Amino acid sequence: MPQGVTRTTLTLRAELLERVDRLVRQGRARSRNAFVAAAIEHDLARQERAAIDAEFAAMAEDDDYLAESRQLEAEFADADAEAFRLAERRA
Image 1 (cartoon, one colour):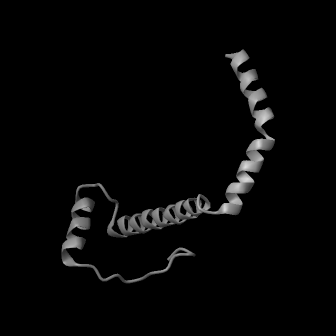
Image 2 (cartoon, one colour):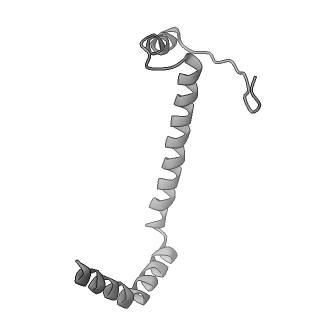
Image 3 (cartoon, one colour):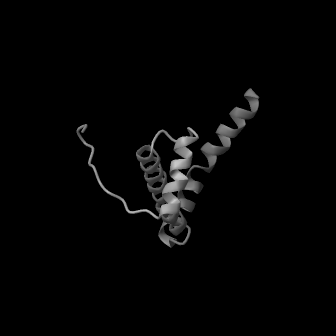
């Protein structure tokens, strides 16, 4: 077995396993193992994105963050306007 790989056992409903097997037979998945590994990777990525989204959503309710954001916006307003003017001249 390759280094960094662990063999494990899963318990699945028969109907679920048959659906995976059907995909393998149709060539839409390389193997049961490949399908399960890809599904786990997909779900982990989805959960990680959801956690990041939740953190950003919390920022919208954070008064200290919002105050700092408004301060930075005010401090950079002139530079933003100048960058916009320069971009408009180039267009």
